[in-house]
Length: 112
Image: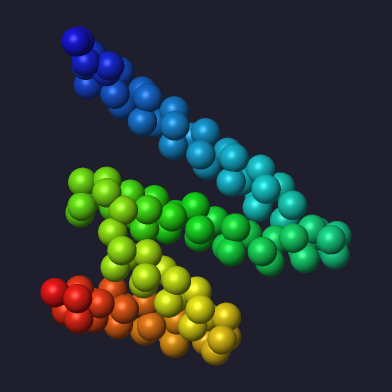
């Protein structure tokens, strides 16, 4: 199978093009708006962006971790549930992280 990128020039053209497009996408929202006041509804919706992105980043690592060859690991599932549960109960991010870490490293020690 031939390589997708044939030579160094093609690689650098692609890398610089993707970098420029990424910059333009971000600048279109951040730079063009500048000092304008955003509508209250948009500000309210933007507050939830991190909580919408984090599950998409974490779910593959919990459900199909590379460390187990893509097999679901009960310790990772338990740690994810402990993290969510502690976060809901305490409303404290550090307590949620601590509960997840303790579960992730402690559960395999308990069950052998």
